[in-house]
Image (cartoon, rainbow, N blue to C red; front, side, top):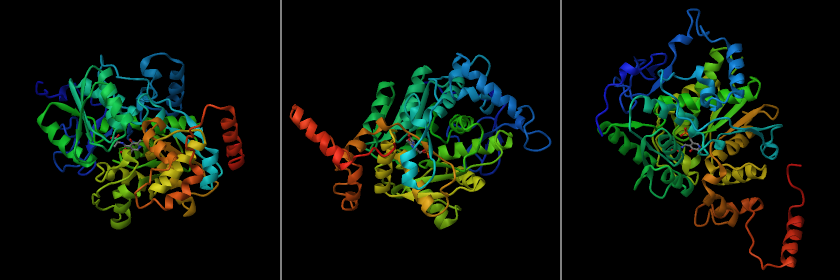
Length: 468
Ligand code: F0G
């Protein structure tokens, strides 16, 4: 591996990097994507968007943007069939001659969840399923942009620390883009499904004997010593791609803003990205008002909730994180300041939910015929609490962001239905109230009678499907 040459000359300067701490503006960040003045994170901004009259965009006319984004839906060009690059006017531009690395990410469905709406006590409820991406999580929308910039900068190696989804996504995009990838994951703390993806896509996969936060620490040292491109969500090019989920959502809603959007919070990159998109869409005149963006964490991995409740968001004290929702088992979230800004700007809130609440919410989403991973189910669990508190009114419209596919973590689902998820934990007794949600498999003799008896028993105990 050769040391990486200075890449500043190749930057297009259409977008620039601004430090969220001291406001320093640069065109090229160090390999750890931290400001060399103050150590804070960078965000991407677009100087060309701001006309002299204020925030209103100079060149982008909202109506013509909406029109050309829709027109691209009937095009077969790779950049148009990507649900990320279709919105390329909202993204940094690659230099001429550089093509995006794309797996046709984005283009994810918006589902109604009638049973979940009833369970939460709201009239209607929608879910934008980002688990329907090529590697089955929302990470692909950010990976297509950041991996493309990594390749443009001439890197041969990309790297991330991960709870499993970032690594699966990064490995796939690196492979597609002809780059090698290095994955650092906490040993024994990620689902097998996610681990298997990074193996399949050829990553050098290191299971470190630590947690996610420990993996981040090691990786930060690695990127300072070796010419590897950091693809964690401190990389602002990731967040630009992840913004497009909110743009696509608003397009699916005919640009009518919902009252609430609810997102799981781990490292807090995704909430920051979605919030950035909302503010930019408002500033560009694409939407007339903002939804309230709220972030839900697991009780066992709640540093952001605690920061806001105990310190008014002024500081964040890392916690030792533990939750069955391993995707968000994060104690020291990198993007908490960015997330705080968008929650405040959209008048959203934060909430935390217990392991039992997560498990029942996941089963309820499943009962609507939609699979998601436990980390995604925190959104419904959180919504229920926000409705009880009066923050979300029954007649208001809400969109849950489901971040990962149901098949990402089948072990959780199997344990839940077999009844041993909470065995030996402090929640074991209370978990009995989840029994009505459980559908364990039954082992029978291969006889007609046995099957008919089982069918009749099932009809007696649960006669009406909940959604008809
Ligand atoms: N949901 C899922 C399924 C995730 O994989 C993650 C994060 C989150 C929610 C939280 O998003 O970190 O942007 O606040 N997973 C990362 C990973 C950390 O390594 O795969 P966030």
